[in-house]
Image 1: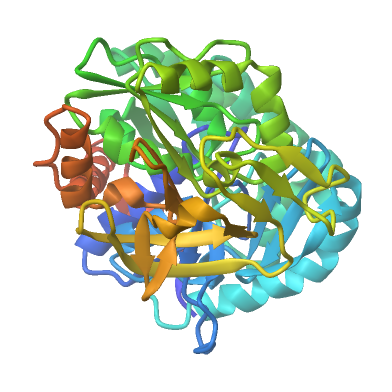
Image 2 (image 1 turned 180 degrees about the horizontal axis):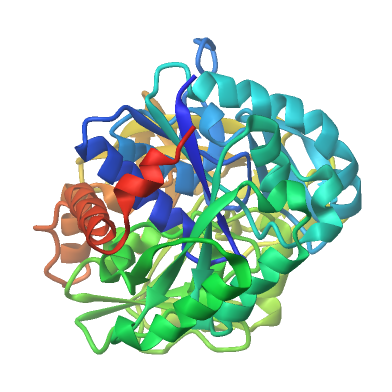
Length: 491
């Protein structure tokens, strides 16, 4: 079994995902065979990964974070890197994915009772991930200080103590109160959990780090833990795909550019990193529009992203008045792209006769494409290579969706996937829908698509830029952290 070290945070969104990715890349550069692992994840941003030994299955779902971390390691993603994935569908319930496959649905209270059974899957995947590795870097979820959930925990100390993995605690100084959060975690953890922590690091520091020397001394006084370093605000992290939709609340406009792309922030938005390649284009401004705000009138393109709850998000879409905004946008000659759930919303009707998504079994669509969608129990999960029909250019991406879409506009497909027609295009060519995520990641297609909107695009190798960003993050961590000590404490 490989040696392992785990990063846990004093709270959610402290930057664990990027730190693990950067440490994975740093370990790879040292010649180590390194793998990522996250026992439990909660995100509607999913990726398609291999299911080892299952040659008849298209693939399984894991969090996009572990997909990115696998890239940092230079290996193919595996479902065992994230054995439990929760995909929120309502405020109190989520779809449960276990080792890549749908396990069922559970309300928050019911899920707590499931955790004992899920720990077996976590430990099984843990053994598989470490089989051919020198080092496994584990990412926790939330905070180990949530002691009210400790008895059934599988994501933080519940896993660390069972697998005997030492823990580095991550504190986020950008949100404030970092001394209290680190010292408070030490204070309330039971002794069994406290002794798993071998030290801590401070993340997202801005300015002169020497100004925090007294803060480090205070933390040492309260905890006795060693500090592995203070990580500055990592600018390169902005060039990496984000997993948690909380980051959308902090996105700001990039300034006036040739093309404004408006993206409505759906309540159950999924796989919004589909927009990252567009954000990387120097002539493109991507604006995520929060609920209660109108779609900007000067947008040349509206992209409706994926959704974990198509009907629920469609109803909210209308409540926000975005249906009226997008109708006006079309009358002005504006373009619209719908991806996965967003594609389904573009049609005349979405039906869910089996109540797969919830109690509401149908909703009127936006009517921008002459199609209808019926939700069906079987989920399509696969990586795909395809070809754009309008531009006759190669595409590469993945599908994660429920539902079957039919109608006259599907006679004008947007893509050919594995020899099968996918999606739909309006008669004037300005509305395009597809089930394929990763559409804009194809550099050639993205350039021609932007050109069709009168914007100079392309010339950017998006995947290569992600690789460079991982290298940059790893270099920063090598500079500001004692990586030798962190890796040396792995066991």
